[in-house]
Image (cartoon, rainbow, N blue to C red):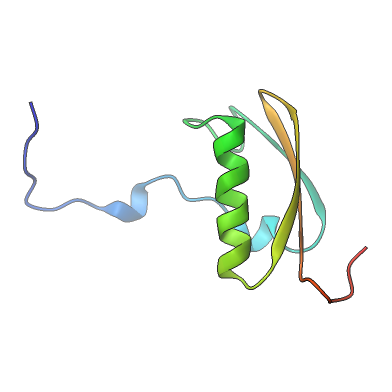
Length: 80
């Protein structure tokens, strides 16, 4: 049954180091280590949203159900 709470610390919710991961380098993110409670497809969606908020885009590749590769870039910028 649903319950109301007087307060809740949302800062303790899953936080990812997007500033680190979206530094332009290629990163492999592994489920169980870098993300836990979501599927790899959801992690790709999260990466796309985090990049959009920062004014860029992210190249993504789902390597498996447990690993995704991402790389942040700014369209029209100096990217590889």
